[in-house]
Length: 112
Image (cartoon, rainbow, N blue to C red; front, side):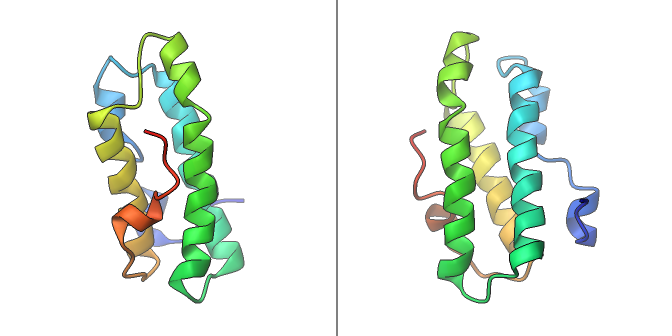
């Protein structure tokens, strides 16, 4: 299944992380997949309220939490630049689907 939202079809997910060699591309790829899956899930479930949206974004955030150890094993980490890139993409996704969401609440379950 592909993303249907026109703003997100061509969006460069985690672009800042791809530009920074500190972040291994294969791990950034895993993060990109998490975000694409989030978009597809939003399109499938069509959350009507912010709490319904946050439930989906929290599950995606938890998947990013699961990558932290793997980043560490590859002499990297989800640190300031990564946090900003990931959070920015969560905010862009929410806005692209018409939600006026709080960026901190979108990623409230983060460990990074």
